[in-house]
Length: 271
Image (cartoon, rainbow, N blue to C red; front, side, top):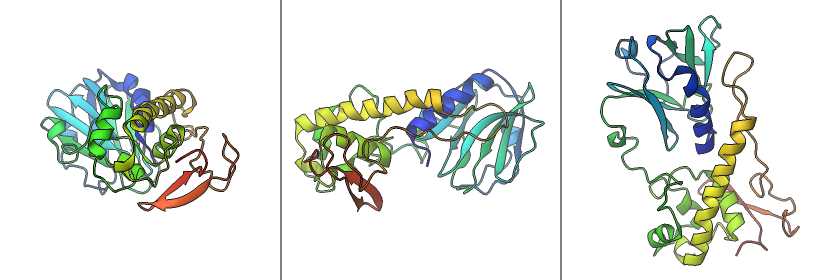
């Protein structure tokens, strides 16, 4: 599943090829995504210039002078830049075509992604209005996490993955950040100390930043038709390594399920 770093890298990959250009057409081959693609999207965008793009949580917001095209990659989606002569494949559902014969092509085999139009300020949209802050905000620190966690009996891992607390700390990055901070994922969020949250906040930013940096150099090209973008694989300490030796102490990593998600930790390094 695309996580926040993949979304950031995707946006950085496609935006330079379309920013400042005018839309000539929108081709919707299958509008039955997680939510229906708005009817009349081509009319809304035709002849309009793309001003900029930004990311909010796992949504990409492409700004025009009269609103935003809001794209979510869902479970299996991707975006790439293609020439309009490239024959679409089965799961290539939407093309936004620009004036130099290139298209921003949205592909989604499982159709859990979305392509929506937002007339007003995106922050007020129902899908965004209740989201917590971005993880790289300066005030996302140990004090912020500590204060919000007081009295909470939910596990610290589930606390981190709550998008109303902070966005972007998906399953992979929660596992890795907790390992680097020496915190056992099953520990109640309200029992984690301020000192531990200080370390955890720093490690969240480090892990996500490293993923973004690595994605920028190892993600497949976003331009052309020689295969679709593939999501990068990091060198991970714990995620996906249940039953293997810990890279720090060589103890065997344990794997459990928390909130229906695979959770891996070291019983010796994490307390």
